[in-house]
Image: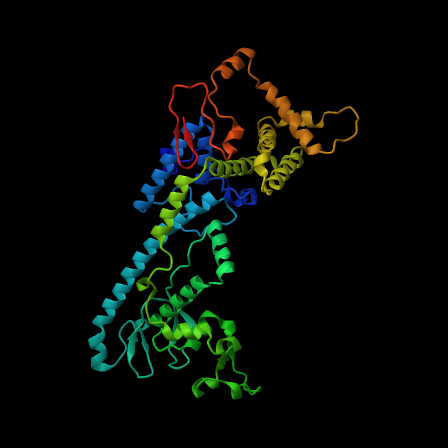
Length: 460
């Protein structure tokens, strides 16, 4: 486990420039990610009990990393959730992104405090000679001629304010909420059920407040031109548009708001009138990183074996195919067979009931593994002449089964070893990992107590 959480993943390197899209097609995780390496480690364990104990330790370590502000290895430090990946990978992306956002907020707060201190130190200079200080970017002149300190400025735009002629600056804004696929679905259902758009209004109000703080003297039209350009129509002096304008004379020669923006009761105008100039770092957060991460960690603690193994299996399956593709794609004799295997896996995993096909997926994976380890023998078996007969309806499945049986027999245990293995069953049946029911206790250990965990893990 320590190797996993320190980010040392030996023997699993994939050229990112040639990386296959298969992991995303399968809704898995990137080949070099923490998820794939966790799946690899978990797959080498011989009992569900050991897997459960590992998972408990993993979640505990994730909590420690979060509390100490340390990134999860094998997960990008600052990416939004990739909806083409499995939910588990998305959730770990959120945790790392939240760490980055908290660091940015601290830096933004320190920067704002520095600007305020600098502005305070220039107050006397302004009062004495009325000239701009050495850092004019920090100030904006309003209609009264007063210089107001700009707060929460990010960068200068190409626009100027309509009433004052001062440049418009893009403010530092609050980042949008981080939503994984399950939360997006919940949000959509809530909107459909209630018609509520509260989250969107909160974001818009936040942007308005940050814009006002960075651009003293601005008006709604300035914000619309910057935030939603299609809702601002430049004036054409040849079409007589000015006759219907519902704005003051100073703006009539420059353009007008769109029809929807001019309607009575328009939400944007109502929000603008209630908004105050508050930089983003001093606003109430729209997204609570601590609450979001704690919720994710709680969900990971309660995840069922069924859901966990599904995601680990798909991620490891995709990673194996990516590794094989780098080797087999240039082999003219095996490229077609590998392409058929990959297509079969993609089509199968697109179905909601793909778990019912786990054994067949494993059979296909064994075929690909054999192609990598013994390519010459696969070529010999695949292309050897056969007795003429009517072609079976599923040629691809027939070839998988044939290769699997031939190569599986090579590694077949001797009768004595097979008997010993039957007398000492160390592994849970593979298919039981995907069962939604808690696994049955091992009958070979009747004296050991059974501990049933609330989240369906059963530790023997």
